[in-house]
Image (cartoon, rainbow, N blue to C red):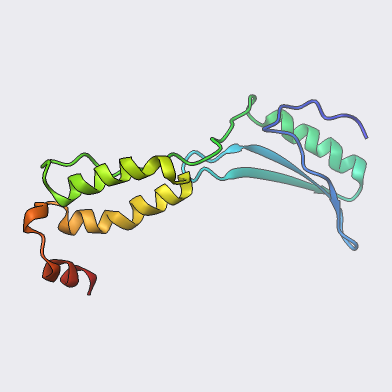
Length: 139
């Protein structure tokens, strides 16, 4: 088999041969800008040589260059608070304090979990926040 000198974004995966089926070759064609998922295109031919030729033709039609996905998704944050003494402001400060102790995935989950709290109770000043308001939010 010849060496594959195509860019990483277009390099094929290992070919597969199904016991009863044709040879199949797979090429990655970059990243979907909306979902961030890898786009893949495949070709199937009766023989391995034909599959490799079809793959080479497919790769020539794909856009050049490599698009690398960031190693981690960007960590979301809560929007900036309007009032400095609100629950929302406290949550933003608390997340900033905890960020150094948390893994990026955990930090993202905290932000996602706190968004409904911020939307419903975030405008209330901490001094006026009552247990009853929290219980109503939870139930």
